[in-house]
Structure formats: structure tokens, C-alpha cells
Length: 487
Image (cartoon, rainbow, N blue to C red):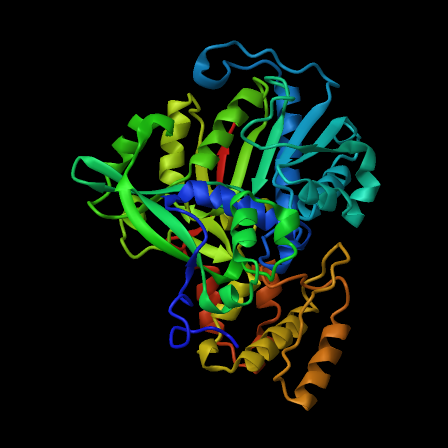
């Protein structure tokens, strides 16, 4: 019989560890999560590059144009910080591109495919050495086996290492570094100011009553969890989504925290008792990127969800993190990242929305399919299966205007509660979408693809004015942004 508080007073959430700073528990949970689920990350969340190609194509076009412009122009100015004269890479030198946190390998595959297409005279693509970098072996293994990377196999290498500590890579040897939705996955502290004191959030993990009752060897489970013994944990019932986190706030111990002055100066701009993310893992990658980039490198790009507006960061109601599959995902504090970059001597930082970066590459406005779906009148009034039907019908309308150059059939399971007749119809629609349609719900759509489908969208119940307003919507307070710096 399952225990409860009426039959057993011990059947409360059970502590699995002690209180520690958020970043320490996040790093611990990340090791457990990737150890148990590293080969199935996309089952828990989709990134903008998991199936879609438009971010990768924009990056490839940007890289190709920058390399060509650099080699045409030759020597220029000073290196990062203005201290060292640039010694340009000789023409024909190999071009090392790193992708930190390569996911399922789709961004790498689409980047290299598009770069090869653009490079009609074979001046850039044949020189590229593309390195997939991740701390978790399961991730780099899966990324490396992406089917569309087979055509680029001789260009692709893997490196199992932490992005903030790539000791095997020599200083000044990398030309381009790409990170897509990596920063939010790295350890971060949650800090607040109380007058002249800085405090941070501490967490303690507890397992909920139901899952606790299902684990017979509790002491063995706790020992395996605290030792991150993934092999032992795999023998227990799944538990990551069943952790209940207790919170406390303690004065920050600065001896192991870098950038103390930069952080404290930043927090002076934030009201008392307002919690903000301090993305220390992301800061460490900035420092490492500065070391690795060649003096005339194209540069570093990170794409992630966050805010760069102090008014947004000062909002006590903002979401500082989310939980996906039991793993913490932190909002990126782009304003603080700019301050840390300045401290590191990086002077050429630009921050823009991801939509702006992709739209500029395509010469048009773009929004994601989710943005379009949000423009539907009262979508939350629909039952879950009716929301699914709206998504599938929207995909059907857009099929005639959107055509992917890749074979990516959308994976869309139909809910069990869907009426049988509707289920049969929706399965036929999904099958008819083919493999060159919209690959997932976070794929980017151009203004032309949407406006060319307006008649069909209006038949589904969309309003033309609302759609056009969505295309012109300014960035959200917390939005996907592109953080870039060059040498």
C-alpha cells in the first residue's frame, strides 16, 4: 500500500541532500540528467536548431561573408582589447569552427551543407574543421551520427570536454565559436541585494511522497544520487520530475565566486530583494572563448533566452528559471554578460534578438510557428486535442508555401483522448505533409510564407490583422537573443 501522512508520518517529501547554492545543485542535476537521458534530450525540449534549418543557414551565410571580407581586406587594426597587432591567418589556413553544446547535430549539418552551397569556388568550405564539443559523451556521439553529417564526415571532429575548460585546444587557434541554447543549461547563481549585503538562493532536493514510496532501497538511492552514480540510479524508478526543491537565502561566500566587483556593481542597479540570475557558467565560456579565438577570428555567438533590459531584470515577478525533464534551465542575464565581457577586455559586443539575426539574413521578417499559433483567437479555450488539431491544420495550410531543403518529417503524436474520427483525419493530414514541410513547432516562418497562406489561415479562424501585428511585434521582455563578439 502506498504510504501517506495518515498511515505513516514519514511519508512526507524526503530529503535527498543538504542545502547548497543553486549553481552547485544545478551542476549536480545536470550530470545526473545527461547521464540518464543524454541520448534522449530532445524528448524533453526542442531548441530552435533541433529540426529547423534557418538559424544554421543564417550562421553559415554570415560566416561565409565575414571570411571572404576578411581575406579580401587583409591586415587590420589591433586584436581584442587593442593590445596586440593582428597577424592574419595566411590564405589557405584551416578554419576551425567550434560548436559548444551541439544537441542532435542538426545545426552542424545544416551549417556545413549551406556553407558548401554558398562556397561555389571552394575557397572556404574545404578548409573548415568543424568540432562538436560537449561535456557529455552521449551528446557528442549522437550529434556526430546525424544522418546529414555523413556528407561532411571528413570535416567533422568531436571533443568531449567542458566548454569552459578546453585545455587540449591551443590559444588563438579557433576562428568561429557557436553556442545554441547552451548558456541556459550551465550553472548559475540566483542573487539578490539586501542593502549592502548580497545573498543567494540555496536549494535542498526532496523526493515527493509517491515516488519515495516506490523506492525500496532508500539509503542506496540517496547514496547513488549524491555520488552521481548513474549506473546505480538507472535501476531505480524515474525520479527527476518528482524532486521538490526547498529554498533558503544565505549571504554569499565570495571566495569561490569570480567577478565579485562586476557582480556587486551590477546588483547596485537592481532593487533590494529582487532576484536575478548570475550566469557563472556562461561567464566561464566567455573567458575561454577569448583565449581560443585567433586575433582576427570571425568571433563568438551565443543564442539563448534572456533579457538585456534593466527594467525587465528589475521585475520581481520575472521567471529566473524553468524545469525541463527535472533539469534547471536559467534565463540569461545578458546585461551582466556584457559587463563581464567588458571586464575581460572584450569591447565589440552586440546583442540582438534571434529573430533580427535570422530576418536580416533572409531580408524579411520571421516569426516561429509558435508565435503564429499564439495569434489565434483564444487558443487556450480549446481542449488539448483541439489545440493539436489547430496546429496540424495550420501546418497543412502552410505546406504549399513553406518547403524545406531538408528531409525532416515532423514528429507529432496524437493524444489518446482525440475522438476516433478526428484522429484518423489528423493522421492522414500528418502523413500528407511529407518530409519537406515545417519540421517542428518552433521552426521559423517568413512573412512571405505566412501572408501567402492568409486565405487558408483565415478559414481556420485566424484574423489577418492579428497575424500582421504578430509579424511586427517588437521583442518580448524575455526573448531569444544573439550575443556576439569578434576579435
